[in-house]
Length: 411
Ligand SMILES: *Cc1c(COP(=O)(O)O)cnc(C)c1O
Image 1 (cartoon, rainbow, N blue to C red):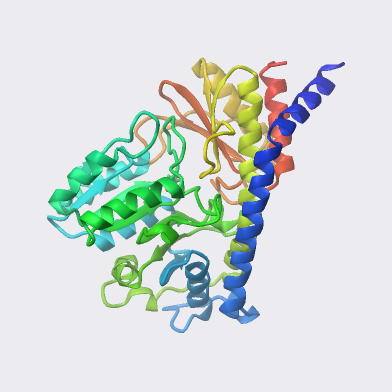
Image 2 (cartoon, rainbow, N blue to C red):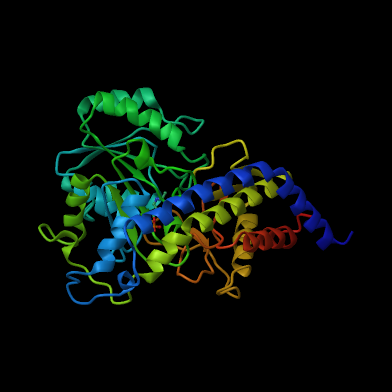
């Protein structure tokens, strides 16, 4: 067998071993597709909702409809869905500033949050929550990646205003938190401290399971539209979905107190947002399968990888632990060569805004930096872990797996 045939046979073998979990992913996608379709039908989405607006954006019908569709699909009373939210970090920051006041306490139940949220919560003299005297407490996850429930429940004695959890792994070696794990914690928290607002950073988690955290008692979820729920089509933006009283507070932070989402226009129109959300369950399933193929292939090649097929699937990421920095960089650069856009560019580690360590990112994407498209990134610190996510089509990821095995001379 020549090398090409050998790699093809190897990938086929990986797919065979992933057969059961791929079927499970298809089942989740079907369920979620129906849920999203029904959200469009129930709210009577029509062509006119795709039109843009200008100026203040008063009576912008598309904006309101888009929010209702998200709220229906995510099983919440209300939602903000807006191209004015510049990134996932901006979205989560907006929600936290909307809910917290000076002298309030923020309890973080899933360890140190995603890198770019650290300056939001604890920056010095940069307009952070800490600057406004919002105190925070971090409870690390246990070594198996689950909640340290006992410690979290003890910390409720100071009646924190908000409890924040992060569903996805971020740049850490762990599995995502499943909605089952979240459900168990939420019940206990609500019993002891019913007024604590439970919010979840839902980035990369949307549509990976049949329900979102808001269906198991989480009050507010937040995420980026250039990840799962934008379906690879939305141009920019974020969403915040949850109970009406909380969303009202957050709306005032998005624009100005007293004005909320009454203002805010978008001349380009909303078709990409609606269409992206409609495609999101299928695109997320493709990305999930891609992550599981990467994980299977590299674990068979003797790398440490996550997820394994026994772990709960609750985000779209595959983590691969490389032995050396050089191999990690070579891997990320190979992913870039497999991209439809900027395939000829070579990524290097750089000082990205909001990150402590240098980060290397392969993102040869149609929408800049969109990580629902095939992308890979890594902070330059030990252990040398690549985080791979996305893939608008499963076939694209499969081609990338093949190229990586080839370029890194693994077979
Ligand atoms: C991507 C991500 C963020 C931040 O989103 P940006 O769009 O990169 O600002 C926050 N939390 C998690 C878990 C993420 O995956």
